[in-house]
Image 1: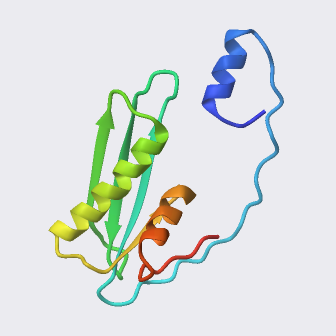
Image 2 (image 1 turned 180 degrees about the horizontal axis):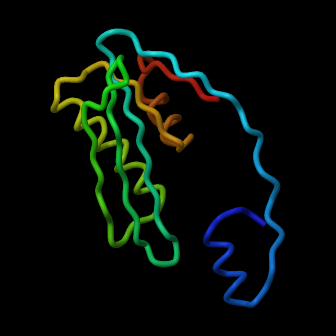
Image 3 (image 1 turned 90 degrees about the vertical axis):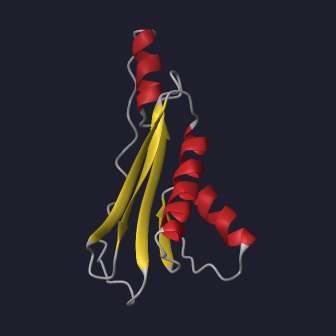
Length: 128
C-alpha cells in the first residue's frame, strides 16, 4: 500500500488492514549558504482529496539563513496540484513585490520544477 492518509482512511472505512511500504532511503543533506544577494524560498501545497480542504505556503531566507518573509494561504476546495501551483505562483509574486529578483525556489513538486524549467532556459535548476 502507498503510505498516505487517503489510502489509510479508505482501508479503515472497509475495515481492512494494509501493509505499509518500507521506509524510503534516508540521505544526509548538508546545507550550504546561498551566494550574496540570493533569496531561497521553500514552498509546499497540500490537500485532503476526499474533502478538498488544503493550503499552501512558503518561507523566504537570505544567504545568512535569516527568515525574510513567509506566507500561508488556506483553501476550502482545492486539489494538491492546484495548491502546489498556487504556492509557486505566490512565492514568485511575493519575491517580486519585495524586490527579490534572484530567488532559489525549492518545491517538492517535480512537475512544478519541470514546468518552470521548460519555460525558461535561464532558470538555474537541479533535480535530485
